[in-house]
Image 1 (tube, rainbow, N blue to C red):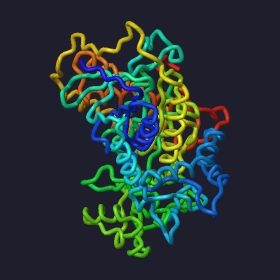
Image 2 (image 1 turned 135 degrees about the vertical axis):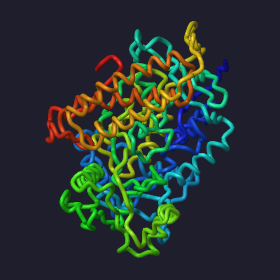
Image 3 (image 1 turned 180 degrees about the horizontal axis):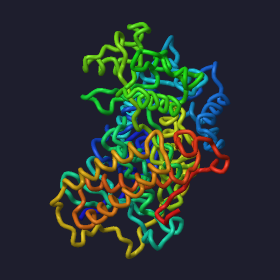
Image 4 (image 1 turned 60 degrees about the vertical axis):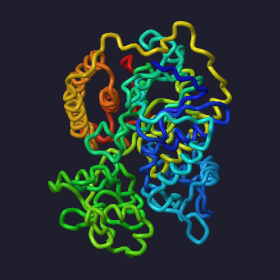
Amino acid sequence: MTIHRHDFLVIGSGAAGLLAAHKLARSGRVAVITKRSPEVSNSNLAQGGIAAVTSGDDRFSLHIEDTLRTGAGLSDPEVVRMTITEAPYRIAELVDLGASFSLRNGRFELGLEGGHSRRRVLHAADATGREIERALLETCKADRNITFFPYFSAVDLILRGRPARTRPSRNACLGVYALDDRTGKVHSFLAGSTVLASGGAGKVYRYTTNPEVATGDGMAMAYRAGLPLANMEFVQFHPTCLYHPQEKSFLISEALRGEGGILRGEGGEAFMKKYSKARELAPRDVVARAIDAELKRTGAECVHLDMTHLDAAFLKRRFPNIYAKCLSLGLDITKEPIPVVPAAHFFCGGVAVDDHGRTAMPGLYAIGEVSHTGLHGANRLASNSLLEACVFAHRAAVAIAAAGPLGAPPAGAPVRWTTGNARPSDEAVIIKHNWDEIRTLMWNYVGIVRSDKRLERARSRMKVISDEIVKYYWDFLPTRDLIELRNLACVADAIIRSAAARRESRGLHYTVDYPGTSPKFARPTMVDRYGK
């Protein structure tokens, strides 16, 4: 068994992880663990952009107001203020690192998206995340203090004491066990500070815009270590995922609606006026529920986003990647509407952290979608996610540098992985079956619209599935599929418990049994492995 020792350990290679690695490399050696190649992440797929006040027509107060309004009373006002006022500095930093945003007449070309009162979304055509990832990856790969470990799947955090006996604040994170997918061997990665930047968990749902890697690994590892997860019921369903048999996860950016796209039903009628005065520019939760209601009312399999009334040359310039992708599937968006459906997209909840990404456990930080910072509240304002990733990557790096190293692991710490009596798997079909059942169960019972009855069914069934997975996990040697299944089950249970605890409808959480908003629930929902 191999033991790797570094000053800092980053799990994940999205925008948050890469920016943190770049900053930490100034102070020591950094290991970056990625499940696939470093280019594979949710950040890389982000189309719309990154929100920031950069024009004379905009003000911090307006961006703050838009974020708080969209967060439906659960955003932390101080975190919102801090993030938005620091945004211009992070934008300037990305530009210095080589990120190239679209310009118009020598200035940033700013997009408008749902929930924003001003044009403030910087973008690189319709592939903003990919451009930011490119710049950050080139920077990190050129840094001798950063070592990438691709095709390593994190299994569990290495802790100073057992989570069943030691509360997080009295424990410490020493690193992580990670499976080398190419050899099947588990390695130990030890570091003075560990940063979870592993992204979200969209694959817990049957339909998602997320890549295959989004299986909630960081959330699940933190949960098993005894850390609380906050606001897991607030799962943002993107209103417009391409509906096509050859493409199950291709996102149709919110920016298309910002530029004048119209949602139409089966008969061609524009239906958003029935659901919001803002129509297509309503926040995502409103638009997603409206589409869900139309699909259930009509029995149609999708609705259509119509861009055909806009200038064809403009569409090709503004959305070159979406235009090309659709055209490759036989769909010309300048001439025919785009078939779309809602799909799981972004988690507003995650590992509870403070304003520097610190968890309750010494030595462990969480940034990006894996974390709950208080910025998004009950619903995320469009294009605030890349912003949050950059702001908290910076602040976590500052905190880690100030904290200094934790020191060497104490004698007797469980730094070596042991397999016990586990043997190679002989029934991999069980993994696929449970994977499919979890994702279908979550989509049907814990999706856009919920009820007490659906949540109770989901919790009852998840108990059976989880018991099967736990037994299977301890009987057989770990594989990437088994690790991901175990993590999905953990995240699914946390979502169900959180949703059942919130007896109101607020933001992204809508239940038919409690359709109103209650002041009693104007607080985060917290769940942990101890039953809270």
